[in-house]
Structure formats: structure tokens, C-alpha cells
Length: 255
Image (cartoon, rainbow, N blue to C red):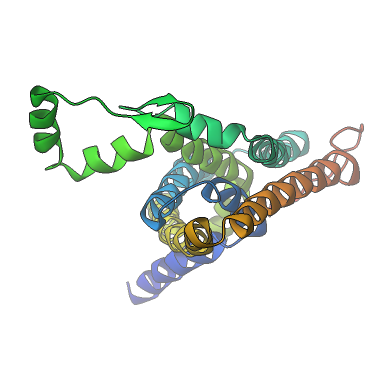
């Protein structure tokens, strides 16, 4: 039991370490660069981690329980999806679409020339007073549906790309399927915790520079979009041409 608990504890910290992978950090930085509070950024990290954990657990469990072998072309395609996603995030960031969506697709707000207009009635005030008792209502109402689904979807894609490697690593360490699946969940919780800390830390310079150094804030946000675009193109090139996805002889090693 003691060795098993040690393995589970190690899984949590490995999950936190997994959150620091370069493609993960680049993706969340591109998203967080347009956020205006550390709290919202931390929530984005949690949502990314949940999406990542869902895919890791589902795909990893299939590999553990049924011994599914992922063919090289499918594995490379999953890796390629991460590159395409980073390219999309970079383009949305650089084109200003990410800010436009964040400002215009949000519950309870109407915009006129960039100014938020709020209409209040006594009934609205009463309803808001009741809603303020719920932390979830306050948090998700502020963040909006788009901001919730975006990091969740990005986390799912990242989890899809890394699920095979994590599952194979577990199989070499834990032979009992049920405990191996528990390990996957603990690994996922570690990833959630790690990404929450990372996104909160990344948001600090963006939120600090927004009100004091607007030009620097714009430069940081633009730089994050450029890095996401370039890194995504690099992954597409590596998976498509170096590892042979676009050729007749693909080569893939889960990592």
C-alpha cells in the first residue's frame, strides 16, 4: 500500500509537471493574454485542466482496459491537431477576433461603440442580489460561455495528443487496471492544479500592464499570438513532414 501511495503522489506531481509542457504554456498564454483578472485566468487554467483530464482518462482507460494500439498515422494526426489549434489561437489573437468575441459574446452585456451599457430594473436588482449568493453564477456569468468552452476544448485537444504516452507509462508501472485508472485521475488533478497556478502567474504581467502600460500590454498580447502561430507551424511541419504524416511511411512514438 505504501509503494502504491507513493506512486499516486508521484502521479500528482508529474501531472503538475506535465502542465508546464511548452505547447500547453503557449496555448494558455495566448488565451490569458486577453483576460483582465488573475481570477479569470486561474479559472481558465482549471477549465483547460478539466478538458485535458477528460481526454486523458477516457482514452487512457481504453488503452489500459482493452490494450488498444494507436496506429502511427492516427497518433501523428492527434499531435498535428495541437499544432493546428495553436495556429488558430494565434490568428484569432493577432487579428483581434479573440478580444472582439470576449467583449461581444458575453451574458448580460450590450455594447455600443465599445462601451458596455447596463439596464437595471427593480426586479433585475432583486434577481442579481439573489444570484450574488452563488459563487458559480458570479464566476461563470462574468467569464461567459465562449470563455468557458474555449479553454475546455483546448485542453481536450491537448489531452488527446498526450493520452497514449501517459497510459503506456502507467501500464509499465501499475499492472492492476483499476488502480491504473485511479492514477490517471490523480495525474489529471495534478495537471489541473499545475495549470491553475501557471495561468494565474501568466496573467499577472498582463493585468498589471493593462492599466499602467497600455503599449507594453499590447506588445505582450501580440507577442503571445506570434509565438502561438510560429509554434503551431513548427508542430505541423514536424508531424507532417519530419515524422511523415503526409508521406507513405509515418513514424510516431508516443511522448
